[in-house]
Image (cartoon, rainbow, N blue to C red):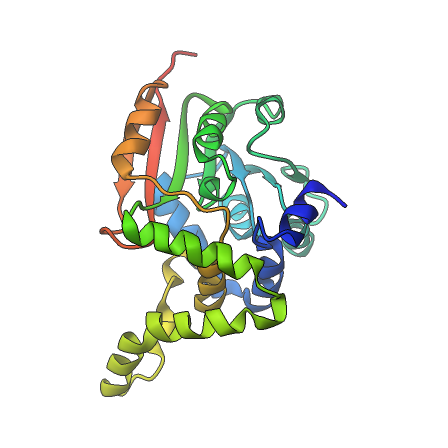
Length: 275
């Protein structure tokens, strides 16, 4: 049994790849276009750029970057996630030499360094799930070319609320798989009842459910499962991420916060080091 499989079996890691495998059945052209738009909004024109996707998950954003003209390298620690990205490559870019997918760890600096330098290094909602977030954040900076950009999204630190969610996530992963709905169901109701009621009163039932995360092409249900189950789990304030990369020669270019909520803060940095 691999280390990854052992971690899942012992309840120390959420099976992200299983969730992404189910997500692929919902993937359509609209979701892909929205993923493309979200990349362009934060990173501009990707045509001709080299793009490293650290923790590629479903492979959706690797696919979006490739369709936007980038040369893409995708890797993930979870073999099922690697399989998802490989499947998307097979569907949309079969035998494409400009999109490579393989298994690897963001916590292995030798591996990350061996990949070379990239114009854009992208890691959205991943590094806080490694079990060693600050180490992973440092490693993510290693393959950024001089003048290149690093795009990370990290869960916002909500203080006590974040500690409560850590306990929920730990409990979820240690429950038998066939009983996790007992935890997931109440959280679904707690998270969604207000918005669902407003939709009904506006005669637009489930409108919010359909529209949530559409800006990134994601799925409300799979995003909820990812949120509740996502473990290991660490958080940071945006200013902590800013100072961390400033010390490493990076300049903040763009910042989108989640307004103090339980979502991710998005940060784009420029590697200001000379070539």
